[in-house]
Every structure is written in structure tokens, then in C-alpha cells.
Image (cartoon, rainbow, N blue to C red; front, side, top):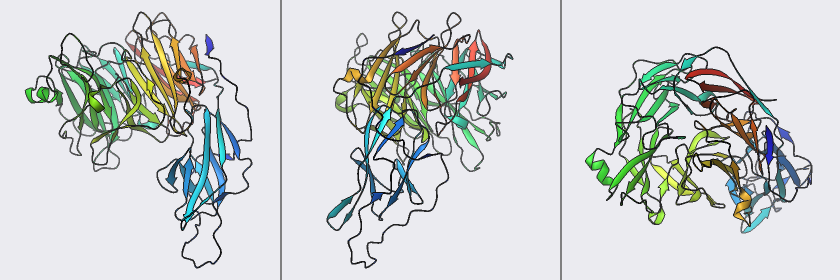
Length: 529
């Protein structure tokens, strides 16, 4: 089964040649820039694009090759402007200099739309500007997918937990009955190591899809450059407490020394911590996730036990210091006493690196982002661009960033009776849709997935893989940047599925795959045919 889910839209016209596209490379020396004090009597020229093939460039939404344009007339204060926002060249913005070329980093996962690029700087009070380059992002044409599994069983368990991108991806195979997880922080086909999680509750108040009650992450260790930390955060004590445990591992994922002992991050049974939630008749932990070394909890503290009201949902965060000790907890509420909640899995990834932020909701508004400041404290902010509704009924959410302010959000909603996937496409930097429905697709599913979906990036195309149990083939939903395509992976039937998160550059048409069926784990690959 492979079908295109599409609403009527005006077709896009290809108006020019794709710019000079080259692969990723190592940074070169900075371009020579004009010195404002060189004593020249003639007015300096404006910044310019040298002999561009066209001032109207066209790129596919799945493009992973960077755009490079020759430039001239740059100064120390020249800035690059995209859709009205500007960044200093050589900074942390979306464009950089390599020799005498301006490079715009692409990594696929873009949303269809029009963008404007220019260079500008001031000479005295006069602003000098380059010509305007228009960039059109057009729909991609994804190839079909196939999956293969090795016949050998490599492990057994009842849940899978996956976190991270590329070589930093970690896979956990959970045995709920014995409160243990087999952790693979290197190759997924390797044996990994076993970690005890005393009191582990799989599901608890969260329950169902997206509510595993456990998250794992791999972060740089302290001291030894080769060491990394595997951090486990999990729900225990009948859903009342979240614990964390830290294990030092080598690059290939081998344990160094003894694992650290579990320690409490937050407990509803702690009178002081419960009081910090404010007056309430009922409190429960709804979500547990990790953002780098920060443990993030979604908590509902109802003032009326029978009825949920605005402002009942908030986030609790604790940063883990370099010695592994938790810093003081920080509680976050939405502006004007609105709900601030975290669906069961709301991690954001982008082609520049993983764990940059968590996608959260304020009321029903999206996108809002939770990030980590340089001081280790959480920071809540909204993006420019159009806010979209992601209903409270959503039980799982994941979002993905691409170049030019592109963002996809995928939210599972509707419950077992009417399961569907909401796909939101947002151009955060450019034009906004007149009708909010134009940026949203609602995809009906034949049944509720039996485990959390897994987000991948194959040839630059955001790909959501959903396990459907023993009776239905695994489903894959792919975005073209303007529509979505739903297909089944013939012969692949899994109770839970995990795919390595997208690599840092979006390159790759094959990714490692893990499938848990009937308690047996097998590994294989997901590929573009």
C-alpha cells in the first residue's frame, strides 16, 4: 500500500536553475573583507553575489546538499538576511563563509515556500545592499521504502526506548517484569550492557503510546574526552517518583567502572516538592524525558480532582551537574497561567545537531520551545511564525527542523476508537498561510500504533515509522514538504519499532532498524529503494 494524501493546491513553477550545490566540507579560511579604515577615497561597493546562475533558485524540500554562492564586496560588519531576519557572517546563523563563497546549510526536512536572501552592511549612515536572491522550496519526490531484518534474535523484552541521532543514538530494550533495560550505546547489533532500574513503572499515569515511563540519552562525560554518560530517567514508586541513574561508557558503549546508584529527581510523596506545585487535590506525572543532561517532567496538578482546568499542567526540570548531582528543581508555567505541557515524546531534532530543544505546548499553541541556557537553566520561548493547534488529546509528539525556518510537527491523537496523525508544517521565517488548515494534514490510521512511532530522515525526507502489532504491517508516513505519503512496509510486523534518529547532515538512504515482536528483538535496516 502506498498512497499520496493530498489537498488541492496551486502548482509551483520551476523558475530557475538550482544554485551551485556542493557536499558538506571542512571550513576554509575567512573571505577577505574590506577594512573600513584603509584610507580609500572611493565609496566601497555594495556586497554582491558574483555571477549567480539565476537570482531565482529552486531546491527540493528534501535537498541535503548545501547551497554555495560566490560573493564579493564584504566588510567586517556584513550581515546575511533571510526573510527579514539577519545574522552576522561567521556567527552561529544559518549561513557561513568558506573562502569567497557563502554557504547555506541544508539538511532536508524543509517545508515548501518562498524565501528571500540578501547581504547588507552600512558605510556611515548609508546602508548598502546586494541584489535579492529568491529561493523557492518545492515538493520532494520520495522513493518507496523497504525493510529487512536479520533472522537471528538478539535480545528479548517488552518495550523499546530510542533517543538521539546518528552515532549518538542509544537503544534500550526493557524487561518490565524484572525492572531492567539492556542498553546499546554503540552498535545496535552489539550486546550492550544491562542496567537495573528498581521500582520501574512502564506506563503509570502516562500509559499507552508515548508513555514508556523511561528515557535514555547519551551526553559527553566529564574529564576523559573518550568517556560518555548514559543517563536513564524513569518513573517508579507506582508513578509517584522519577529517578535517574548515570553510567560512564566508552565511545563504543562499553561500561567504565560501576554504574551510579539511582537517585530521586522529583517525588509527589515529598511534602516540600508537592507543595511547590501549588494548591491541588490531585497530582500526577504525565511525561518523563531528557534534554541533554536535564530531566524534564510533565506534571498535572489539578486544583479540582474531578476536572482539569487551565493552568493545571506545568513542567518540572532538574539539571544534572558535572558530578552527577541534580541542581535545584525549576518549575515552569505557561504565560498568563496557561497550560504548559509536554506530550509523551516531544523531542525536537534538526540537521545541525540533536537535543537542541523540546517542542512543548502553551495552551493549544505550537511551536513553543524549551531549551537549555548557558547556565544550565531552562528557557522557554516561542518562535516567529504561525502558531498552530495541537490538541490536548495528543498522546505523542515529535518535531523536526529544516533550513529556512522549516518545521514539521507530528502528533498522534484520537485514541483507539479514531486514531489519526496530525502533521503540521510551519514556515517560521517567511509567509504565513491565510488559512491555518493549509498547514495541517489529518491522516486517519487503520488502528492505534502498538508502540511509540519513530522519526527518521531518509534522503532528506522526514519519515515517521509506526508499529502496528502482529496483524498489520508497519506503516511509514513521509512528508514531501507540502503533503504526506502513507505506505506499509510489506512483511514487517512489529509490536514496537525503533529507527536511528536522523544523522547530523541528513545524508543517507539506509538506517539501522530494531523490531520487537512477541518479545523477541531483531535488527535490520530501513532503506530507500
